Structures are given as C-alpha cells and as structure tokens.
Length: 98
Image 1 (cartoon, rainbow, N blue to C red):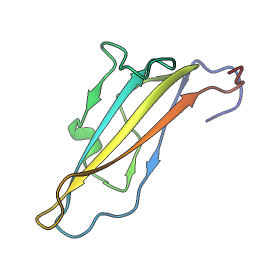
Image 2: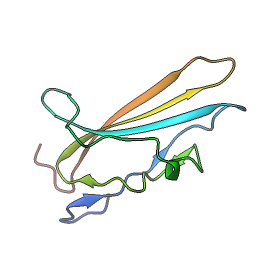
Image 3: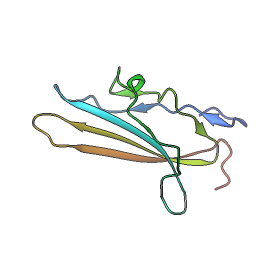
C-alpha cells in the first residue's frame, strides 16, 4: 500500500507455486467487519484476468477501498488432492484508525 490519503489500493497475492497438474480458483469479497458477512454486490470470482500466473495475482478489475475489509480466497485441486483453499482477511487503510 502506498502511504498517504488514497481512497483505493492495489493488492497483490504471492502464493506458493502449485503442484504439477493442479488447477486453481480465486475469489475476492468485501466483508462486514462486525459480522463477517459478505457485503452484497462485492464478490468477484475467478475472472480470466486472474489465471495467467497462479502464484502471483494483482486482482485486476477489483477495487479495494480505504477502510474496508476483504476476504481473499484461493482454492486448489488436482487428481491426487481434493479441493483445498486458503483464505486471508485484509483491512485496507493508509492511516488506520481502527
């Protein structure tokens, strides 16, 4: 995140490389910081722009707003491993007051 008074941020996820033959899936959603519920109309799920590099994703097309909380999920599977996912919750701010 860049310091200062910006209203939006870019997020980059750096993940471990996937095993050979593995498939992956991404989801980003804004969540209510009190309840953890998904905020309506904020989900972006696995667009083609997120496929080229499975270990690094900059979530192009999604806007992360100042003082909002997000859950980022990456799922992975292959012929030997059933679905496994990893979720991270991030709070976006440059001068946090929370």
